[in-house]
Image (cartoon, rainbow, N blue to C red):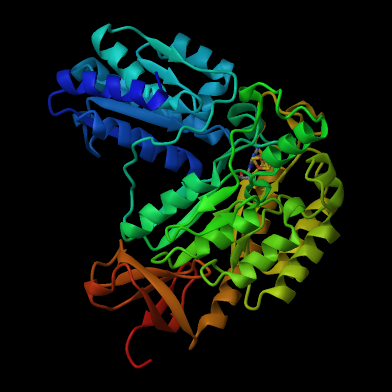
Length: 493
Ligand code: 5AD
Ligand code: SF4
């Protein structure tokens, strides 16, 4: 039986026994994790559950975990302590999914210290969640549903999106890079790309539903379809493409048939950007994250030529020191990173950058850290996501002997934060008196008399305006700047 048919079978079985049940999904990770949570919510709502934010009232609580940094573990175990009493009082089903469940030591800890957890499932078995839930409900047994091999990307999963204006679309899963600090390749497996047609159709459908902004997601988006292309090439080279077992062929078709019947070839990330750019109704396209080593010229040209692709590029630096980059296995030097930035700036007018930086990687000297500050000073990012290096069991860097003292890590983090804030504050000044195109997202969370939206460069802009503007891209004159937002004015433009 096909996976989705089997899923539907269990969804229907749950529906028969479920009486107005409520669910809560707690997302603890990145945007891919968030996108998975929307699929978990999709399966639950299809099974007749409705969403609640009140954990006490939930009949099913799902934790969607992350394992990129240690603090995610602390948060999970803290929260499990809280939900234990709901389990005891109301018999709530407690399920834990996500990347952390691929780590054996975590699952063992759960079994030993948190035996009240009903279901443990991993990112490769998410599609079987209705089966797991049904068995937990009916047979009252503890379910452990984890696969070590890379699961296929499942098309056709139900999805309940958290927003009606902006949506994220996973284009691939897994990572082949093995940066030495990172656990992702171990838990998400090797790179697998979705069929271009499936992505195209998903975005088309979102456009028809009124979505305006799409974020394409992947651990390394600019190697989209690279593994599949390589596999095909080596099959062709070995000249036995016709003899090979069907399962061994990459299950991919590089042709996209557009709505008007036009057939185009999409065999790279650049071409995917170009194809999505033609979809009417979508006004903005973002993507996270590209790897600097794979930022090829065709991608730069596609960004330049595609009017909907935002001129903010997230370009993870991780460290500005060539020797630390080498020991991180990032495969670029400080100079190569900076010249890539220069090349992109020369080709794309008004382009801005955001980045990820890790401080306190093993062996990081004061000089290495100053190289990071130097790159930050030179690139003058719009936004910096800063992380203190966190040891991850099973990674190469965890075994390195020259780990940095916590005190030094924190001290460097604070120095980087101070510099980042100075640069962001100064950068905000360039918006003053300029007219910016803003996608209006809704009412401001802190003041319901104000509307809030974002510029192409992802800056929050608050302004006074009519609710009818929500969901539209409008010109706003920026009148003042604050650390984390700008103030805009709608009229008199
Ligand atoms: N410690 C700290 N930060 C990490 N990241 C990934 N692994 C670690 C780790 N072990 C950061 C990287 C990555 C972002 C998603 O998380 O900066 O780009
Ligand atoms: Fe982790 Fe590096 Fe892959 Fe990003 S590219 S997911 S940091 S291994």
